Length: 165
Image 1: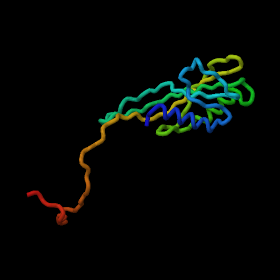
Image 2: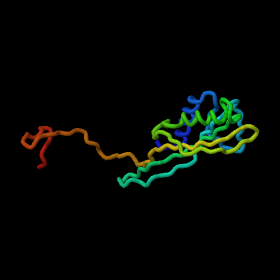
Image 3: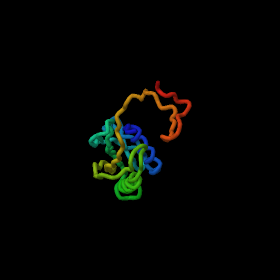
Image 4: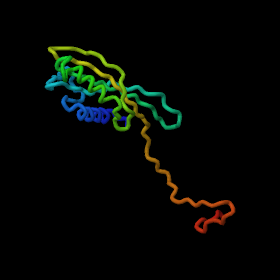
């Protein structure tokens, strides 16, 4: 598959089921305008970028694509039940090993504190999954083999097969 939006949507939907007490959304188009309104906490699922392996030399371009996901955590408070650190721990457990469609299982890269403002704490968890990026080719329109007759060297020819004149 290797398409970015389906991967992000699958991660968002999975985390929403794994973390039902929290709000899980895709990273907003206007991050500066985002307002943290969730009663307990929120996770924003974002795409941080990809790295590509060298193509294999098989004639068709196929490359491993390392997809980096930025999971931003917003928590009301830091240390009490359900606060930012609880959400961060739950998120880490949920995302580790999750396999988005057509991808390898997610694994963790890093996590860091981002900011605190008015009791709303922000952390970022970076996770990665791998998929394959494959060259798109037109459909093969060559004729297909429709029947195959096998015989040993000492067997007679199949009567349906006419020898060349």
